[in-house]
Amino acid sequence: MKQGLQERFDLSGRVAVITGGLGLLGRQHAEAIAAAGGIPVLVDVRPASQETETADWRDRFGPQACALQADITRREGVEAVRTAVLARFDRLDILINNAANNPKMETPADLVKSRFENMPLEQWADDLAVGLTGAFLCSQVLGAEMARRRRGVIVNVASDLAVIAPDQRLYRREGLPDDQQPAKPVTYSVVKTGLLGLTRYLATYWAESGVRVNAISPGGVYNGQGEDFVARLSQLIPLGRMASRDEYQAAVVFLCCDASSYMTGANLVIDGGRTCW
Image (cartoon, rainbow, N blue to C red; front, top):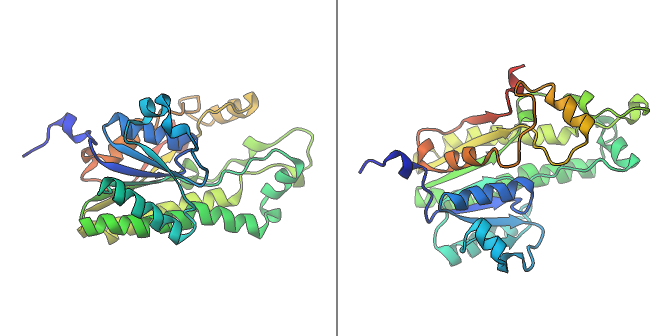
């Protein structure tokens, strides 16, 4: 029977695994899934401790939501997530590959290491392990389970910096010589661009298995950044501002639900128009 428009946005009973679930956007994705009737499973390397037992947690993420601690850079960690989800819910419908390193540039040493010439190999390896290898393993283990069941959705969280290069002028600080100026690390661009390649590959690989794979490329989210940075970035965005943290929720639900049933292999860019310029 043909679904009505509202029904196509309904995620009732669908189980969504969200990596990096305890981070800034991970919690927003989980809240959006719950608001559409789905059951979010927030996977993070950090423990949620007693947070999941509070009324605030249940109000925000739904009574069935849960948090799982796992290292997604290790296959056994991802397999443990699959086992736990299937044991608890007996289904797996959605995977949101959201986890990524976002190194803070706080100390003088951090600033120097952020520059391409100085990035330690260990940081390169760790950033790619979380952002790309983690997405690969989660797709391999959890996506394969969805393909076996012949139904599922994968959403890879990329970035506007998967479409354009970072404007390093945004990060400059007065009084520092050029070789000590902070930079957006190269790993961020490599990871986010790699996720677009993974999206296209899996979209075609599993097209006949009922698994749709898309990406979302958000722009910068306001999270208390300094006034100078916000002003500089806002000048590069046609809408003239950074995004609020909840402005991607509707797009995530759209990509996860039947409203996007004829969409796969695509990258949904939501950046206030920045990549138009």
